Length: 247
Image 1 (cartoon, helix red, strand yellow):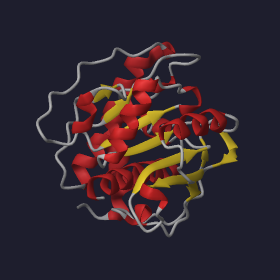
Image 2 (cartoon, rainbow, N blue to C red):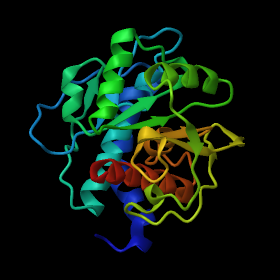
Image 3 (cartoon, rainbow, N blue to C red):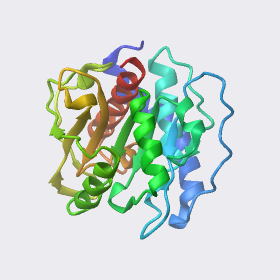
Image 4 (cartoon, one colour):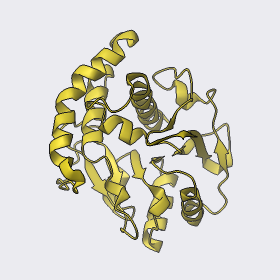
């Protein structure tokens, strides 16, 4: 692993090229081209959840540049050999999703899964899958909580603090003082759902509320956000992945 003090410089160098790729794909804020899934070969592959577009196409926000930037960082600072040039998109009722231990759900404020997708996510979590929920704020919590309780009716959603092992799974996170990138007045909160509601057990779901680490990572090569906050977004994402792979 590279020395941690150079992480900021490493980020700036690595994501410069991929940030240009993102600018080309998303210039004019158009919708990105959905690429073919990477064939399963046992290597870590980033898996994004696709859902029906009721009011928003938020499931695809930050795709695919965020994935490319994050996988580039993981390949440089960890012993994993992830697929860097490709990633996967799955619906929650796709049996193929069960091959991938970590999944990412964007903009759950507009997520309304079908009954089959509800059952699929319940099975995914029960079989050891780990879900990262990101990019939502304010009243969007109401819909997210309604939908996740369809999946896990008895679940208790608990506020996480810096002492939780997920914040020390790879990097030692020093602070959770973050905010929503496009609205700095909204202070980030971190929540989780434990297996069997046991705080001493496995965290099945981590929830970034009033936050959008995907946006920080997508635009990290463009200079939109301060380097220190961008670094924290990468650290959180890598910690989440490492936690999901080891619990």
